[in-house]
Length: 505
Image (cartoon, rainbow, N blue to C red; front, side, top):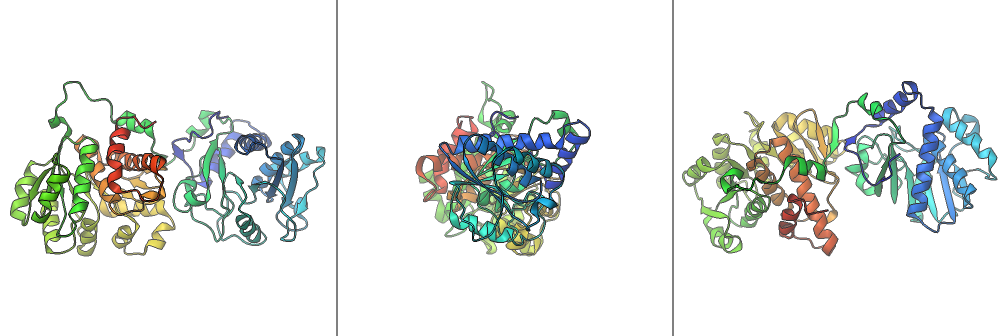
């Protein structure tokens, strides 16, 4: 059993993959299912005591499946430890007669306590200081139905701390979408395989603090189930960006060209350029409208800023550059279209963001080989690429990022809570970041970071996933110091430098 449940694993699982892990542990490794359930109950109870010290009254809402079985074990443990326990069974009046398997065995263990279970109804007062949600597990597919629907609504109205067993009831383990209604948990303890839906889409809103326990499963169990989704962590950053050699020079870390900043939008391109420097690019040039040159030089003299009013002025800059970032402040007028056409014709590794993506969507320019490039759409831009609406693509972000990658090629970042990146068969998820990032300019900073990583020799897949991680971690550092409201994109600059140098722990 993991001693540090807050340390989340890299591999993320669907509900079906987690059920397969469970079955392999039971059938191939001889671990009885009731033993796994007991381990889950003990882990939940340990988290309960550690997270809510001084608790004296607990309410357990249990369903009739294995999720409910976990709840029965917690109820018994809590009663044995002297807590006042209210056990509410959500289901029909013949609830106990419908129990089977390990849930039935856990129910039978309640006979050794003085607990009296009640069938849940809206007329029963919920007495617990803390609520254990053990109603619906990861197998839920369709919308939540009664009586669970009423119970979930009531839990949320009460506003008391909630510990969710494996997943908040009503949340889809595979997509992170709410299936009609879902419990808003304070803490969720996920078992065996960390549910990917907890870390993206609506999952980040409903899961609260996510913890994990592998219930003592041997490593060999996990070897039997291949996964396609992985968390990016500080370990990946250390592995892919080792310390620089002592005789390093700027030529080793690439020459990045940022193209953008049509009239009235010069700040976006400058944000990308400065972020690229902070993320370690050797040299950074900025090709922008003349009106923005003086301000750019005053803001960041380290960026080599050039007036570019026509393609002829851009072409020599493209010849010198190793990597191009295009899109921030580009606009969708004639100037932006001409700049994008020239950059695409240069066929260099690039980061494409914002209006570069919008122009490409309008003109269907996702042709050619973009395998060395990074695309960074937010949901609105992604919807235009896929010819759909943002609500549809948000309903399964994992499928969406795969679909985007097939159209765009290269590595695609789908921004949002639990940002995803994909360069083929594997998807990477970043669970860092905070709501303070919902401000103009953040995407420009991300594009600069990704460009800098390409300039330093990372392939597109790694530049995308590490860029997202660095960006989000820098924002978390800012929020920890100043709070989430009122963060500026430029506030990240000094923190980017800290994160990328491994000084963020």
